[in-house]
Image 1: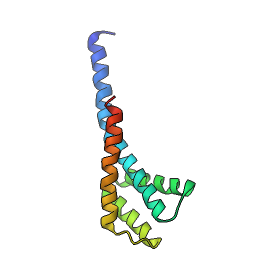
Image 2: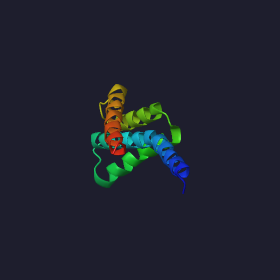
Image 3: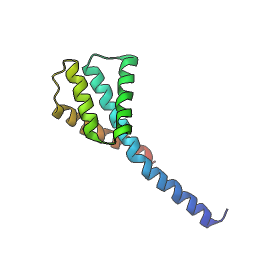
Image 4: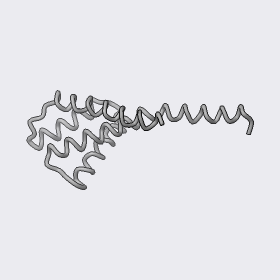
Length: 109
């Protein structure tokens, strides 16, 4: 392979990594939110993991934070949790920051 081809392949890998990162961050954030909400609803173990996965999948379908917030808020409300939409939004923001720190530092290596 020529030096040009090596650079081209490296640039392609970099481009793909940069495009994947936001999706990975959103998935991690949603999983953390789902696990938090599951705990609020009294779920644990496999049930908590399944609920968190459903939150990750909801994002994949809608690509909209409002969908995630409304789903989690509705589920919490249905389980009698006093957490309001503002609490869910705050958690979403908190977990977004956490996921960015975790995954950003992992990709910087």
